[in-house]
Image 1 (cartoon, rainbow, N blue to C red):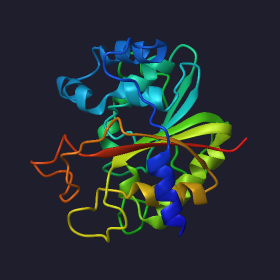
Image 2: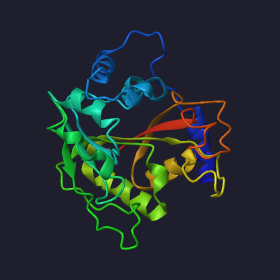
Image 3: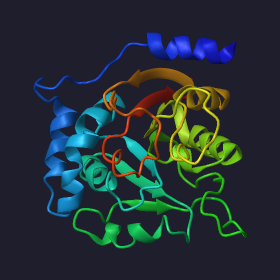
Length: 254
């Protein structure tokens, strides 16, 4: 019953994202300026049109004076955009399990021009003795922040780890703080199989985050890709770069 109510909420919620052709607002302009930074590689720039960071961050209600935590930045694709936007009036933290293959690509990112003020937080949990990087987080040693963001990472964790990460995010946020998630879409209530391991049922994500104390604020179809049939692994040559993704925005109650 709760799934049906959540699905109804998801489908009925207002869609709020910048339409192509609209003049950029102040935040979008700041993001687009950051996208022109010389620290970004040609490969990173090639993904801009698909990932639409200016519109996504506008949907998440990012403001330049916010304190933000980015979860699992990997190679820093979003970090290189967030940091310049927040450098003057805000603050950017990043956190990931270490040492893992997830932290290795990030090595050196904070040494790049304009990135020195990015602070790396400890993940707050010991490394998995079995060698898995997908471990639950502990509390982050940080004063309450305005926003927590994660991009295409929620799918990597099992249920217990996801709930721990949601709790860590909830505890790190100020009352009224925002929690934004982007991930690859899985068919609703589809069991795990060899093709959907890096996809997430958005209704399940909503349920889990709400069970962690958050309130659903909005969702966006900005990254909707109707020609992705949701049948294949996101890394397949016929799918990669064109996956259907959801963006969900939650708030810690005031």
